[in-house]
Length: 136
Image (cartoon, rainbow, N blue to C red; front, side):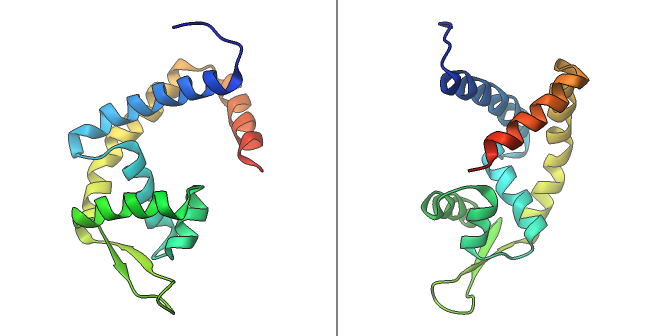
């Protein structure tokens, strides 16, 4: 890899490397890290609107919509009418709940693996750094 001082490039490289670890681990259950993250957000939010889910995940509605259509096609989520036609709600199906449950061990394995690669004080600093970068 070509060395660089560009923070954007270095963060993107690190992100791709970490995403690949999760993708490889989750491939056994048929998910990628983006799909797993979306399903976990659905579990925590309990039938959010598409807008609320997009905001919680930090995604554009159009990007989320494309991802939801893939999961809907696999019968992992279903879209329901909300208060009006512009406000659709997203719910996880039983199959989606089961798949998230099946994927949990793989996800936890990568969490442990990454935490072992980084010293404890660096993990704390990384948490703080990521939190500071996550703010507008």
